[in-house]
Amino acid sequence: MTKAEMKQLLEQKDMQEALELLEEAENGELAELELVESLGLLRDATLNDELTRILKEEGVNIIYISDDDG
Image 1 (cartoon, helix red, strand yellow):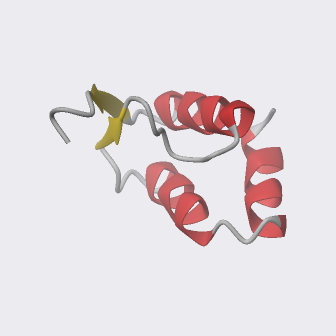
Image 2 (image 1 turned 90 degrees about the vertical axis):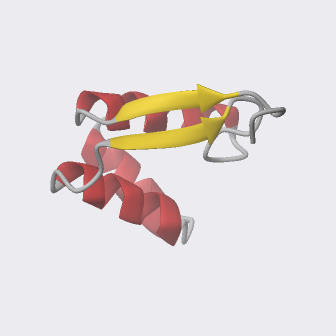
């Protein structure tokens, strides 16, 4: 999935927070993001994987923390 396709899908599904993260990453405003490993960003595992991949491509350092650390 391309970044443009992801943005369109997030807009269609009204996932504003995820869309804002993507836009911040595009603008160089998001350097790193901490995620609880078992939760991720989105409930949909496929979308979650695609979004994290795109964020990494935009230079975001994703730090996974365990449930115990969170």
